[in-house]
Image 1: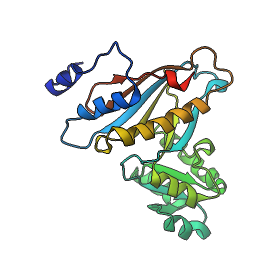
Image 2: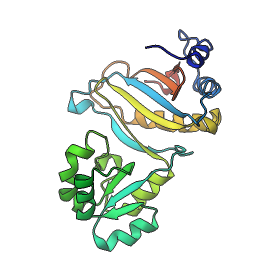
Image 3: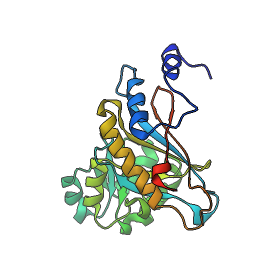
Length: 231
């Protein structure tokens, strides 16, 4: 893959053989975020588990103390008596069968998070083939299937993110924007790492945190030391 001059110049500032402390790594990532837009900063964490086994899955959700810097659009599926509560909490779209049909017939996808009350999952299940591959299917572990839809909406708006393993046993998560600066990004990063450590499956053997890299949208990855998390 051929990289542009800006990326190549930024890569020269990174010692890829070194494991940086998280604050130093995030400071370097912010310095290298030179695009004309506010780049998203992501953490990529490789775990010593095998995602093919059900007892080694790592999945959950955590509210980042400083949010993600993104305006999150929330769609809620609930009964009519909860419409007002969901809207008051900040939901952008609320509905039932009308929303299912809008997604199916119009290929409408103008939302980032889907929340559903448990009594609506039979209906929402019809959207599995559309929402599933995009990682948008509501899930109890992520707190997006819940009777308290107002709380779920408020958390999504406040910067709640879901973390889950991909097929290569890596978790990819946004932890904020370059404009946050290293200190706020460090707070978000620490909360995410602590949640992932807490979610360690009992069946996981050997080193749990294999490697970690932080990077901006257009910049090179910076390797991060994970020894302080002790697994």
